[in-house]
Length: 257
Image (cartoon, rainbow, N blue to C red; front, side):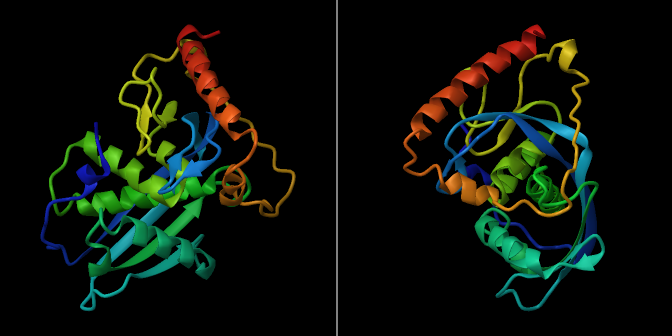
């Protein structure tokens, strides 16, 4: 079984002076939602989601080597404009993943991100944003060390989870399961995995219609909602129900019912 230690790279040379990478990642909608989490973004229950091909974040990261490696250094643009409100979250994300991405303090990053849908509107923009950024960082790391495509996507999902839990389900398309579950082979609390069986034809062109009724941002952040599950009287029963629902929906994916 893969552990966190497997994502800590062997020493490598920061040989590339500068460069640019660009990735996109879709938002995802949970069919069985995870609600409540443990330390280090570990889910209290497993979840499964499908991705939205037209609702995505597109992120370009330019990197250049710097002399002072004591601190993180980055500029962040959203829709082409500076967005200082996002800086604390990125700084926190970098702090969480530094052990696994040791080149972070060696370079200055210019992060230019845009969405094809409104952010903070309840369509999981943090998931697609952290997934796209994680894919960019993995693309940079791949310039320093060899890795398989399978490892590349697993580690990208692992990193994205540390930025926003459900972001680990936005690395790839198709239904993605996050969280250990006995009916899903190689399922993990550390990253999302694709289902290991053929999805029934009925769900090959699954559609999600989104009606925007308010141009404002949602009032209650997901992180606040997750914290409400601590010591909640119905929490344990909710986790049991989520596991049962996931087992049942896996059968639905196969049967097409």
